[in-house]
Structures are given as C-alpha cells and as structure tokens.
Amino acid sequence: MIKLHQFARTWGIPNLSHFCCKLETYLRLTQIPYEVVESMPPKAPKGKLPFIEDGNKKIADSDLIIQHLIQAYGDKLDADLSPAQKATSLAMQRLLEDHLFWITMYTRWQYSDENWQVNKKAIFHTFPLFIRDIVAGVFRILIRRQIYGQGIGRHTSEEIFQLGRDDLDALSNYLADKPYFMGDKPTNLDATAFGFLINTLGCPIESPVKEYARRKPNLVDYCQRIMSEYYPELDAASNP
Ligand SMILES: N[C@@H](CCC(=O)N[C@@H](CS)C(=O)NCC(=O)O)C(=O)O
Image 1 (cartoon, rainbow, N blue to C red):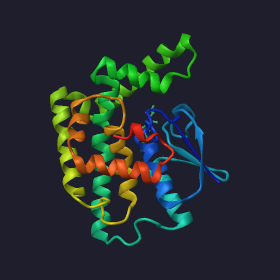
Image 2: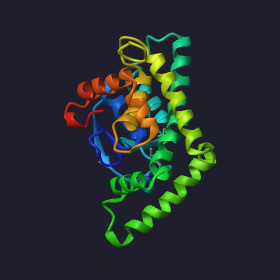
Image 3: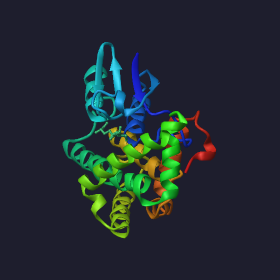
Image 4: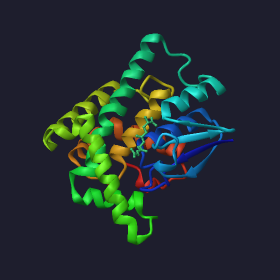
C-alpha cells in the first residue's frame, strides 16, 4: 500500500501543509488506498513534504506523485475534461500553489507574532523543549528567505493582502454556484483548491486574507462540503 509521508494532523483540518492536504485529498477523491506516516521535511528526498513510498520507490512533489498515480491507476478525475478545461485547471492550480500559497506562508511565518506562535507550536511541539526554539528559529529564517526570494515577501502587508484578495475573488468567481471547480464532479483541481482553501479558511492563523475568504459563502460552503464528505472523521466543529 502507498505510504503517504506528511506532517502530523493538527488544527482539525487534514493537514497544516497545503501540499500534503492536496495529495491526501487526491487519494481520497480517487479512493486509492494509502497509509499515513508522520514525517518532517528533512526526512524527505527533496527536503519538502509530502512524499510517498510506493513499493521500493520514493517519490517527492505532489504534482510528480499525482503523475505517478495517474500512470499506475489511470486518470480517475480528469479524463473527461477537454484540453481547454485542462489548461484552465492547470492555470488555477498554479494560482493556488505559486501565489496564494506564499501569501498564506507570509501570514504564518512573518505577519504577526500571534500567528507565528500558533504556527510554531503546531509544527515544532514534538521537539525537545531545550532545542525547540532554536530549530523553529532556524526554520523561520529559511522560510522567510523563501518568501522574500519568491517575491511576495518584498511587498508591504497591505499590498500582500490585496494580492490575496484578488486571488480569492478569482477563485470565488470561477467556482460560482458549481459544486466543484470544473462542474458537477470533483477533478484534480479540487484536490488542490481544497488543500489550499482549507489552509486559508480553516486554520487558526488570523489575517485580512482569512477574513476576506470567510466572507465568500461559496468558498466556505465548498470547504465544509469536502470536509464532511471526504474527511468525516475530522471534528465538524473545526470546519470553517
Ligand atoms: N512543489 C512541492 C512543494 C511542497 C512544499 O512546499 N512543502 C512544504 C510544506 S507546505 C515543505 O515541506 N517545506 C519545508 C521547507 O521548505 O523547508 C509539492 O508540490 O509537493
């Protein structure tokens, strides 16, 4: 059976990592059997989670893992999409993964000390007390460098949140009143969209971006529906 290496569950959502949540949601949407192994990035082949073990193969990166799963199990979600729909789906995934993701990273690792404390506790609480702050501090420096390197970290917080609101407007307008992003049935884009939206709306990291997302009823309803349909074991009280 596939072993999914990801961060331990916390915050009542599937995973505090957008990418881990994307991959686990893909596995649930496709009903591919898997077991979870709790892990941390230094153990991963490319230094980032998630990764999977399939037999004696280790594969890192959610997109490359999904490509592997499609080869092994068939394209269970996107086979009926037209080339134009596939192009739109890919563009939306890039918006979520290469833009909105960094805005939410900024809210966790940089924006406010309250958020940093919540984030630090969630990720590093298993470390022995005497090294916890040092390890967390080193990771904080490294991640803040990534946010700056990507470019988002060079803006003011007001500029960053405006960019985030633009992403949420695009997502909400595109979803409109459809049950899933591409229509009546879930597709690959929903694995990504849920993973990133629940990590904006459903976690205890406060910011103007989260407040804005909470005022989009279709995005809130979308997350609640996927939570209750695909993660029924998670506490309904922590749904967005
Ligand atoms: N492109 C990768 C991105 C994975 C990623 O950014 N993972 C983050 C957690 S959300 C990570 O492990 N970061 C650790 C680090 O950068 O040191 C994927 O699709 O899996």
